[in-house]
Length: 494
Image (cartoon, rainbow, N blue to C red; front, side):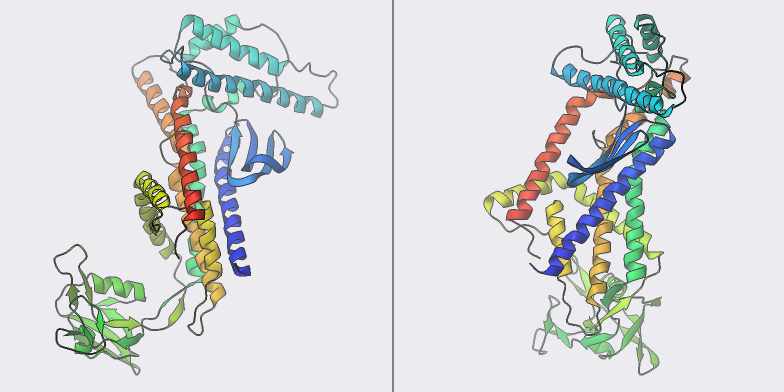
């Protein structure tokens, strides 16, 4: 392990922390704008390493740097719907979630009242601190009223609450905490809050790609030809000697020479080597034109690509040349969205096959097989990859290795944020995508009720989905353990 390996791991940890903090900021900002009570904004899990209370929110960093969260008060409605189970383990899990909301409302209201009381230095008398108690009594009375009448409409429940609650005339906090709870937001506002986090990851991925491609730059093979292969086998492999059974390459037949700079193909301008490879690979076996610069002159040569594996899914064309030395390229910022889309589609395919990929990784781990380079990786595996990037050594003269490292690290950070974006959009609780689906369901239900002239059905009882939430969390923990163990015991062979 070298110093540069350690530097690479540290760089990844910093990128991960920034990505997580940036994601949670995407939730925090709209939540604050919509007056949702937010008690915590944390990067990491477990014991708190550092924190500071600003207003009604505690900001901090925790020891286990594997994610982060903001704690919005009232994620689940405290009111049981008519269709909710009344008994059994599913009912217990759902009731625990509803009870947590009631406890959060009471606790937050008490703290809010304490803050206002402490701030009112010139007040004639101290508040008696009954706001939190009243909030708890109101919520408990609502639940009792619902159990007694089995109503589903929030308006009816609130009326029952008014009849059953203690009629204490205690002073209220400056803001009604219960009215500000997340579950009472409109469906569009819930969508804004929950989509804010993933959207921030997508924005950060685009920023990192612009920095990597346009500011730092990337080293790519030069479009200047290094060698021209004279002959190849029918399988497309270079043949040092033109023996019987080999074929002359299209490049040699066309008269291409080492040192020629490729500037055009079939009337299209060639920008870089990767684009040229794509143009050639997709070309048909028919005469076309290749434009090169040789000794200050521009030449147009006729060339007919050779198709290897014709009629098969792996068919490709070649001409028989190799690229020159690496050269630094700074691409325009407009290329970043194109690269972003390519990475998004590639990551989406990976997620679509994630259960199978994790299963195969577990099988390879148990049977001692060499791990597939296409298998998913945990944070441990990505940190190791970042460390390997720090140890990059390039023999080509004129290549700035530090520039290569930083360009690769920034690209890796973009990939991490794309993965976070897609992962959090999965339509499963407790992920952001699960809350998005719940908000859409709630909005559609309210719209249908309004169009049919019926009362507002109120917030959806998402606590009913707690059994599914626990199942998803369990699967995520299992998947993480499998990948962590595989990254330690059976890592990628880079």
